[in-house]
Amino acid sequence: MLTRRIQQLFARIPEILFGFADISYSPYAEQYKSALVFAVPYEEQLTLARYTEEGFENSILNARGKAENILEQIKRLLEEEKAAYFIPPAAQQNEEELQAVFSFKYAAVNAGLGWIGKNDVLITERYGPRVRLSAVLIDAEVEYGMKSVESKCPADCTKCIDICPHKALTGKTWNIHARRSDLIDYHLCSRKRSEYIKSHGRKHSCGLCMVVCPFGRYEEKDVSDEPSGVEVCTAKAVERTGVQR
Image (cartoon, rainbow, N blue to C red):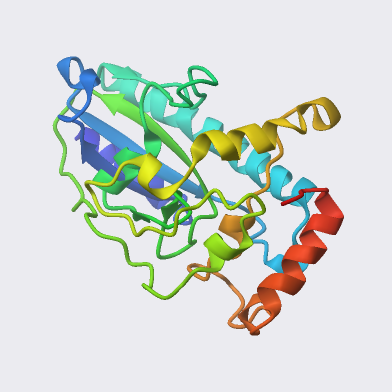
């Protein structure tokens, strides 16, 4: 009954991706059996030709607002069903470890929503990496998705690697056994983004490695598909946002 009600809820919002993950790998497994994970697409699926840092940040905020609204609906449903649940915070615990208490990204992989790209971000078939993830831990057994164990990124695709202003991406291909540090120097990425807190009042959103990803792009052809597109568009993005290599 619980699973069916959740499925009915998401049937009313078909643009949202969702799935269930077995979280026996998590310390939270002592209290909760499963995770409901969902992905809200950014309203504007930006391409490099239209990219601005402010526009990307707005996409993030809009998707966050939608995710919070969906979480409220899920909370009401679970309370009606008298199911124990916990909504883990999305924020990182601190600036040293740069880790959240529960990884939405890893849960999404285990739910079969996608795989981890060379940019260390969840990649979905439908929207690429341009989604906002959220999760609810539930003390109930449900039908789990088929977890992703390998990357679907083409071996010769280096778009996200080439466009990173700080060269934080290693270029290695993900698999289920990979560690975050295998794919990205996340301290370097965070440190460079943090340089803009004084001017922005927040970390720089950047997101170039997500915008350039060919998965889930609405346009069949983008400026970045041209041989010199990455260099041209990166130069334009740097000029618009102030991100320096």
